[in-house]
Length: 258
Image (cartoon, rainbow, N blue to C red; front, side, top):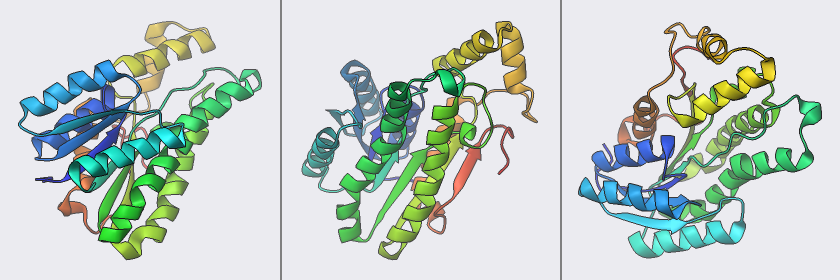
């Protein structure tokens, strides 16, 4: 579905970003991989190349304009164009009641989760507008819409992405560019285990009880396989989704339905 497209994936070395990267490669895309961890990016690059596709690694800190500018410059110089931008980089932020969260931790969460998306869109949109073609996929979270105790910075930052995407979709729609959000539920892996552990600590309950509480509101009663999120990101970047923009697609096993 993505044959010969060029896609940039931030946070492409691990977790959801790595799964999206490999799914895109299987569908025929070449990749630009951006993150702070060069080791993880190098491993993912090798996996992409084993699938017969090209990959460029660009160490990037999405909090900083000059770093994102370098990412765009290298991607466009190497491949000549970028068809898809996947804004996946994000951090969990602190877990505590709001009044115990420091301004530094609050600002750091927004710097990565929101400002990083803004900087990446700002860097890549001019050439997409010039070509009158492009697709932006933003990885949000169901937590932007569903309360999660002690996670106000993360929740607020992820809800901000929905507003960003909907307004940006209106701004770039006349140029043939689409902007959508994927909001995963609890995705199987290290990060969700960290979230559940922090929930247990903050609420003073057992790890098993925290896990039960976390999944109990899902009609399917389970966490999300990472490949399900990647499949949604493939679909939204493909020509099968040419009439979809400004949407917020939940991949949450029903934990969120709006």
